[in-house]
Length: 124
Image (tube, rainbow, N blue to C red; front, side, top):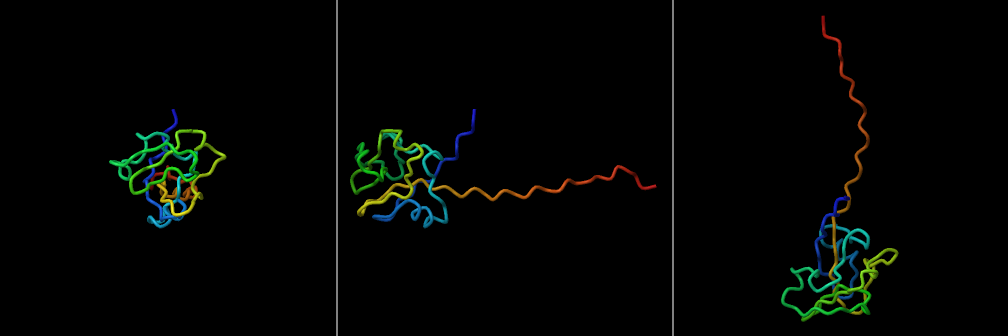
């Protein structure tokens, strides 16, 4: 079975900001786009560090879900919402505070190393 992708860190965006900026401002990370990670589609899957003790509502009409307000976290229960070709990282509206999945960029691929030749002759 394929390895599960590493879990992102959930970061709060600036009011009215998108997740690309929120992640970039969080140590130079990048937003984990749909297809990279599993976005929250239930109250239970909302990030606890931002949503514990708050109300949780299913709001698929808000194109920026998941969102946090002073009292509530909003998510969208329709998993197709978070399926390519849909994109979520750029979305923003009004003064909504997005809950953004941020990940570290993949390390650049190392150049192929040249084969090491081992001498098989012993010094005489």
